[in-house]
Length: 356
Image (cartoon, rainbow, N blue to C red; front, side):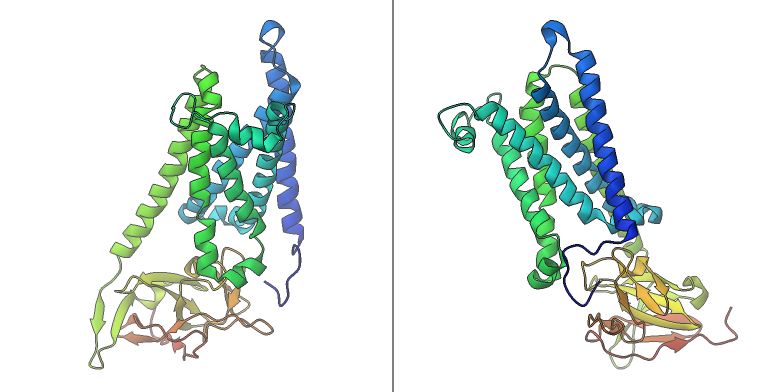
């Protein structure tokens, strides 16, 4: 994060990440074109333009599947977090590949008539009530519009000015775009290609995306269901039992769920226990899956940092997150279920020396 807005905050990690993606796309397109030229020859030959259209379209579909799989994979296996860190870069690149596919396809199929290419696309097929003859191009155009909206708002400027919750809801439209693209392929390319490979690959992709999201959701559900009990005290404050101090990893957190559903990240660092909300102020990332670096809780998604004792980002940054009161009773760590206002200082509870 930064104190000002810049076009792209490049770093060596980002350059390597983006260069790897670009090389991967180039290799994919080259392999697709090469294999297609070998398979489709003579009377069954396909023009170079059509092959490139198919190559770009299939590449965009593959990249979108990767994007949708990164999130649940990072929840299931933390080693995928470095890929999640720059997922927005991958999203913008996916849009550019999809845009190239759309421009080439519209130009090739609609660019040589008396109507403008876009008008021809929108009016050439009125069979909207037919399944087999449905204008599948409109589904692809809708998906491209959503991807453009997401790419155009991918910078932190929009996240800050739209608010994190609004920005997050906006970018959840990626699932709508995915559904439109599945329909675009099913009613388009898979209608004309009678082979089994295309449908099989789309089915495997759909099952993979759905399966990973279900698995990640079940894991989070089990975590919440397995949450320790709560105890109200005389002041009617509900305390959530976290566990013994040694059950909280050093410089990491144990995440618990309050009765109202709010997740709380309880950190152990420097021989003390502190608690903050599990929601990062940047993009709603799971802070409890991060770690303490240089004395600051560091979100695993994009590296935003907060001090454990007050939930404030270190100067000159000004972001704040909610904090929670913590206590140790009978050798058990307890955290208040009531969130304090963002940036409220709390006193970290020191772990007694006689505790294991």
